[in-house]
Length: 503
Image 1 (cartoon, rainbow, N blue to C red):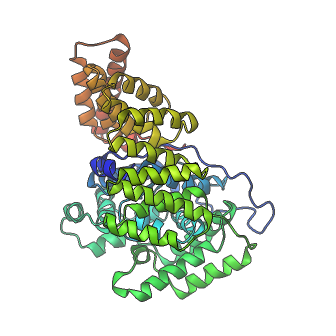
Image 2: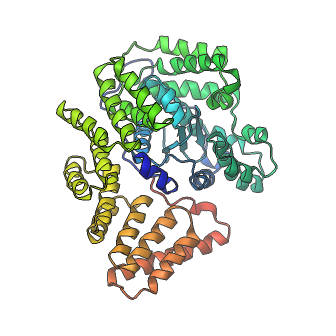
């Protein structure tokens, strides 16, 4: 989502399921032919049952969403989710659900939560020099989850402490993302150091996550030197600014031995040169367009372009410059840059989405609608386009068309809260309050607000515009929700999170 819309809807970002990106070709024969993850034993003997770990992680994520810590950008989140599932899919040993998302913070940090949730700060993405370095961080965090490092730390906690941990984990992350108010409220008298100790890992944990993460990196087709190169980069940053140590180093401390082992592993793997994906380059350029004051950002991106980088990076920087021009409100300059890319036959769904946003923010609604229809014919599954097209229809005074489009897409994207909310707005504009309240109820349910969802479904029943289909949907969902809330009241934590996930 482009910057203007981002600032208006930051708290509406939701995790969504994306199909895993399977690697077409893997290393056919080398010393890393099998991932041989350690045997964790019978699930009944694990530190936390899967449903409880998922519940804690989901609760932490909901609190992070409520704090405004999430980066509300479908394209960045889609890329991270795709990259994370590429790593996960490289090992037949890894099972369970994973969700990857971005945190809106300049700090260099990433973290794993119980239940398969991995968050990555935008600052870390910008700090990486190539895609293999970023993949190495995700692989490391995935390994913390597969080896249950967080869950095993909790096995000595009491039930009440575990119940409170979701808030504590969210507070640590919120404090790192600059959200002091949310952190202070959650900490409630407990020192930040004590909270941080809850999620810090032992040296053995770190070594295991490095070792297994490296194997995931290799099996996914990335450069094995990525982890060692990232360690060196972070170590250098730490030396230059001891008082501003990257957050990732505070919870994942580097040691000379750890760096040496990463370098030894890289030397033991076959030498490979891995080209960065265009998606990685485009996402980094988009994030750069969000940084600092608009004038400073425009100057920095232009300076990077003037350095004559390789063609792929140059095209991504031109896209980033166009996004920065849009952020500055320079619609004509932004459109001129995208047209130049088009003239050079540079095609990408993020460029198509940016062109639509330029028209939309310039209030050229008819041009935006025409563009979105053409773009969706080429990139039918690009989420930014799917979300922006019905928004354009609503702004153009065509809410009934927006509602029909949203309904069609919700048949495959039912777990996308933003689309439910757009549908609610469209139905309200089309004079169909029952359907509007129903869609808003689904939005609240996905946000974990069961009480708010129930109120919306009950309001829907009182509307007089009922059609049989919508009435049946409302009644069925209200029965489900009341049953779930009744079960929750008895203390069953298995309800967990209802969002769409990889199974």
